[in-house]
Image 1 (cartoon, chains in turn cyan, green):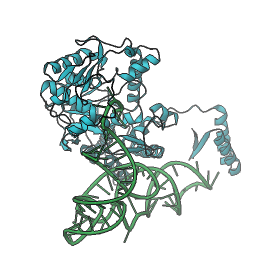
Image 2: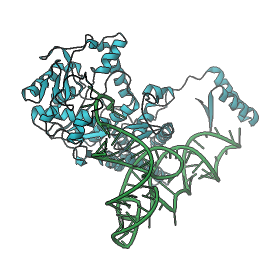
Image 3: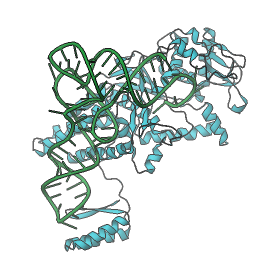
Length: 470
RNA sequence: GGCGCGGUAGCCAAGUGGUAAGGCCGGGGACUGCAAAUCCUCUAUUCGCCGGUUCGAUUCCGGCCCGCGCCUCCA
């Protein structure tokens, strides 16, 4: 019942356990709220969610913190372009992000702090770094972290010193303040004219915090100087997480996060996601193409988090069929999975699925096992080997629910809200049914074709018909 | 150049030192007036290429060919 998870720092599988023996305290780097998040972002958040769900369905308590980056170059620039206050701008996109998370059935973090809401905490950290000789104020009022003062720097990303300090010779820009070393990074950025009224007072003058410091400040505030696990997309390994470690450990001298969990990127139709390729799909984009949120979530779970996953519209199509297979199973056994925030912990016959998840969050293996179990149970039932006694059925129900809960998939059994069928359509369908009863196949087929052209598909069952949007 | 990852059926994608999960698509069949749905069934003698270790490698080692990520603010 222990989760083994690959740790970026040690490059090996390590058990996830709470250092306070109570709850697993973890931090996930959240979004910069300057626009709608895309499905690549959501891959990361969905996997962090599965991480939490696997722990909770194992009976483990968690404390989950995910931040909102609401001040940086992008948020400032775009809010100004739109002529809105930074606060109004980021609140709008925060609300959208939270709505999207809800649609994807992501558990709400226990704390969701924002950078702007924690300026004093960030200033305080920077002060301590300066006191400790690990940071310095540059002439323009910016403050930099002195990478040379932290010998451990580069351990997470395994970048050799020379790579870090010489890699950016191309990007060394003359007007880039006066850093002591090219590797040094900003903790506090002095106010610039283009920042408008987006600045805060500090011991070093007006300005705003650098990007990395917010995560150090907020994670330590909500989780303590040392906590169980930190996570994000692979691109954050360097420099973001490397810098977080330097800042945090530079102040406390203690191990910052005990475990590092990084999620590989999402590709789209075999290509890297990018603006120029116009493949930065948002949930809204996919809904517009007729896909459902659960189908998106399923696709994001269909590959191992350690490997880039190729998102394709074929796999979206496949996920719809796959999910309906699970729905059919639930219907067959009279199971009605619910989606409460209290997760089921008894897997019963479905335990092999959880076992796969506990093994480095192997979601594709888990899905494979789930389908195999579903098939085998269905077959057993058809052979009459499943007598359906109350205890057995209850165990099956709980196990199926636990599986849904661990993966965060909502298997809806109840019919969706039925589309309003126009009177005209219904009458046509009724006519067809009567033609059919009279064995007038030609007329019946004609009407069916007619309906199809009007956008409705008709399906027959033994004693009636169903209409659905084609 | 440095660090790291991958090449498995038409597509997505697991996995293992003993001979390839699962989903989708496709073929065949049952059912059906025909469809749809559903069910059954088939589909990689083979895991980029070449060597090596081994009784045996897709899985370990070496080389090669391709593709990809990161290397200062992108999840």
